Image 1 (cartoon, rainbow, N blue to C red):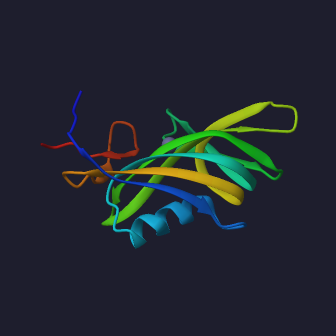
Image 2: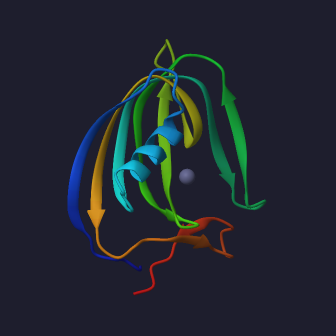
Length: 143
Ligand code: ZN
């Protein structure tokens, strides 16, 4: 296992704007506050959500489009750098009116309400790069 060590920086509690796009909101906030790395969680509610499942064999994302109001029961992720810009990677567990859940890699979601907890990390700049084994854009942890 490879790892890097970080110190804790600023902690932010944010409320995303009604009808904003959630991933863009997180990314734009990171740019505005000059955040390079962070860990984050989100709870709230969304409409028009797209999540994805990564097919290991095909090495591509299969998108799942959800055109209904859903709760963000839990969402976790991080901010790191990709192509020189902050990149938010978020996975979400979403629930419907009967409490049934669906989960996956969060591609996009229109915010109904969203409370974001973002904890900045200070240390070596963490960049994503293409990983030929998985086909994913993973952290480069060269020390
Ligand atoms: Zn993912």
